[in-house]
Length: 146
Image 1 (cartoon, rainbow, N blue to C red):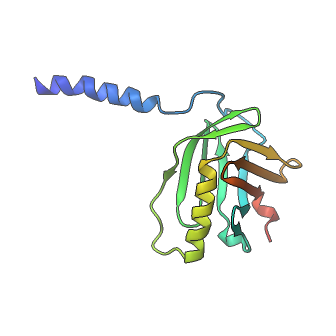
Image 2: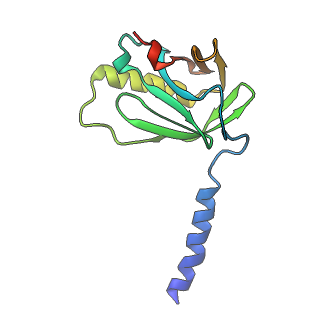
Image 3: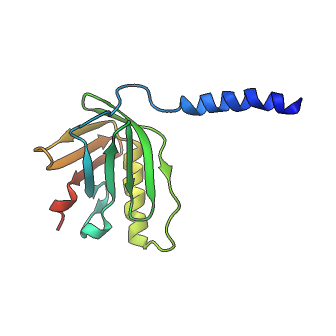
């Protein structure tokens, strides 16, 4: 009898989790945001080496994923014109070792990323700027890093 009561609760939980994605336009095909982008500037942080640059990628299905240099992350996104809403960030476990500089870059990056509200693009494939109250995150394609 108790097992019959669990099924509806599990069904309700599954439906609640399924509804957690952001509503709105999905990224279902090619987008100017597509591809991988490497961070070159964040509030209070200057990226001096391409190896320490956090990476971000907009994937089909309304998600972003990337790496901070210390951990992997992903989140649902919604694009509306040049508006960009990033949902709850899911952060993977940190590696065994991450430098103090790596943690400083990660903290500045993640703080600003959580507050992004808009994006703008330079020449196609040249530069991506994510903006919000936390400041600007400036990205380039990884191939153009020093």
